[in-house]
Length: 79
Image (cartoon, rainbow, N blue to C red; front, side):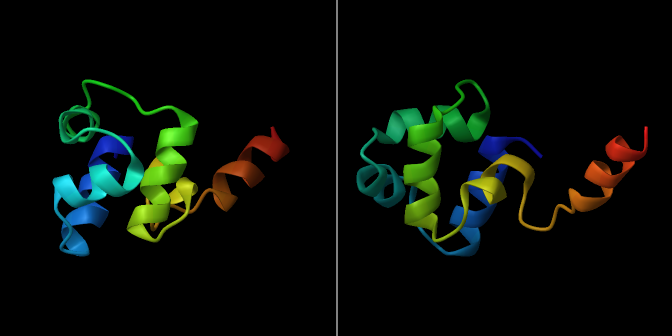
């Protein structure tokens, strides 16, 4: 999943509006909409602000809530 898809999934799960998340993160609703649609990528700072509003870690937005990167890291180390 993309960053925008992860943001939308978590936002909807927590029953938060785009307007609320955008205002709390200090960005416009239009910008959040573009991020969720995948037409814009947030900076790390904006991503962190959005993650804080959503009550999750920035990593959850980047790789998803249930992603297991440990297997991938181990696989890379073995190569």
